[in-house]
Length: 319
Image (tube, rainbow, N blue to C red; front, top):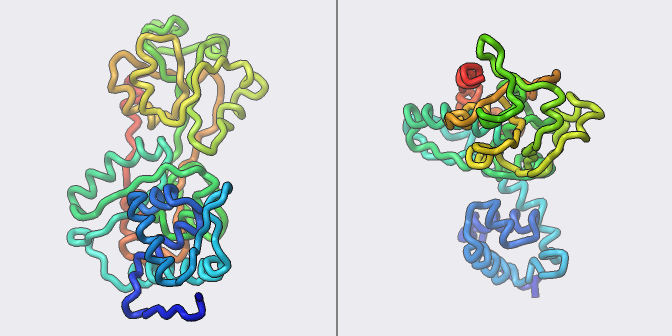
């Protein structure tokens, strides 16, 4: 029985707390493994050890997922808070020197953040912090606060607004542009070689919609108003990386952030043009939990991200 279980806190493996908290949140071995960056067998083995230690199944498989037992429910909040307290204490007590620090930061980013920030961020890490590693997660937006609150993610970078439990900093603004093949029949060429596309042609064209997981394309809907329904969407995808192999040689048009277009315009077959209607800029923020304010390493990375330069020259020169 559970009452007879004796656990020695001096020998208890604290890594098991991470597994327990992930399982309690995700109710799935595979999802917990993805959250922790572990293999499914590793998480299953950890769960078996937890069951043996506590003398309780802890999580029982059902059609809705792995449901926690009464004991697991009673342990969930205390163990989650313990994990958060350990991370916070370590971050505050350890003096951070980027040149010698060995640490992995977990970031949640949308495409625009990856394109705009990762190249300069990696270059800065290589020069100043060779033993700092990054882990980038693709997470549905409704889970952003959960990942920050649990400490699974250190920061979120995106055009989102989170609750006042978290702090934010504006990193950059981005305007959408139309990305298409240079030989597209709807491109207009002015005498000074400036490329553009007309409003009617934009609506008439065949579109590739970029819709990250858990989002809607409200930016374009706000710009087009009732005309947004007239767009002929032939393909919807969650990421922009494949556009360089989808768009060339076709009459498809993809509307992407200008900073995302930078990498895609390395393909000489593609060009980008300004949209033929006004659209508000997308504001991309850096978000983190307030408890990380005094974490020296966290603060250093926040400043590095703030200093990262978003170069739009490649976009303007390719229009």
